[in-house]
Structure formats: C-alpha cells, structure tokens
Image 1 (cartoon, rainbow, N blue to C red):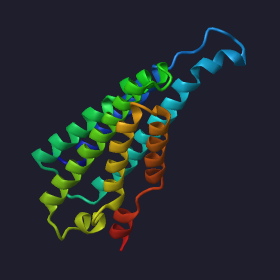
Image 2 (image 1 turned 90 degrees about the vertical axis):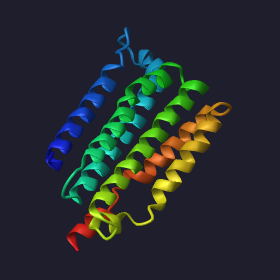
Image 3 (image 1 turned 120 degrees about the horizontal axis):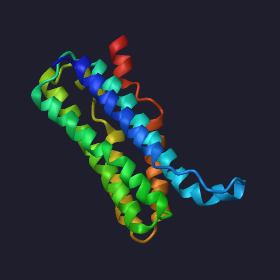
Image 4 (image 1 turned 30 degrees about the vertical axis):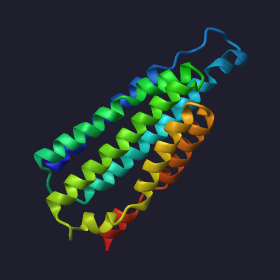
Length: 191
C-alpha cells in the first residue's frame, strides 16, 4: 500500500470522528441565551477534543511526509491509533454530559493516553522500517514532549478520581503543548 492511500484513509476516519463528535451536541429547546448554559460542559469537552483531533491530524500529516513506504506493521499501528481516536466522541460526550464527573474524566484520560501510546507505536514502526539514520528518526530524536505528555496523562487519570477539573486542566495543558506545530520533521525535510 502506498503512503498516500494510508493518509487518505486516516484523513477520512478523522473527518468522520469529528463529524460524529459535533453531531453528539444537541441544540437546546429554548430560544434564549440562558438555554445555552447547561450545554457549556458539553461544548468545552467538544472544544478540547476537537483540538486533540486537530493536533493528531496535523502531526500525522507531518509524520507521513517524512516516510517513503508503509509496511503491514505500519498499517496495523495506524489502525490501532485510529481505534483510540475513534473513541474520542464517546468519552467527550460522556464527560460533557456528566459535567466533568470523576469516572468520565478518568476514562477520557485513558483514551488520550492510549492514543498517545498508539502514536508512539506508529512512530516506532515507521522508524524501524526506514532506519535509525533516516530523516524521520533524526527529526524525532528523543521526543521529550511525547514522554512528558504520557506522564501528564497518567497523573491526570489518577487525579481525576478526586479532582476531575484539575485533570481537565492537565489535558488542556498537554493540548497546548502540542497545538504549536511540531516543526522537527518539517525543518528536517527542508534542510
């Protein structure tokens, strides 16, 4: 399979995931602004999840720009990533509908953690198939930001059971870490 087919499939899945997520948001029955107030938790959950999906889409795009071929293991690693990303609409809805209750917030973190691990596995397979001296391997380097993200997800999951809003703040912090595009691959490709 060519990398362009993998990109197109992944783009399609992410577009569907975002569409499902927005369709989960229900319009209020009232016509005044006060009727929007109960929807604030659902909307905030949606915004956070949209940012995460945008970050994954952006970084996935850059990651695949640095590769020349995809293997069968890469296809499975990519599907594993898409599996976890496809669960984001469910945990987003559950967290927003329940106004950031402990268990929905913890499960949201579990899904984010698993997606991050899946992305790491995808990177690993791509580096393995292209070599340790490849442009991709050189660009990713030690990847401190990914390791920090995993630690923050774990802390947020544990924290969620007692302080769910603090967990949400950690999830937002990780999203902010990644919202600035990772230029390592792009700069390596242009040099």
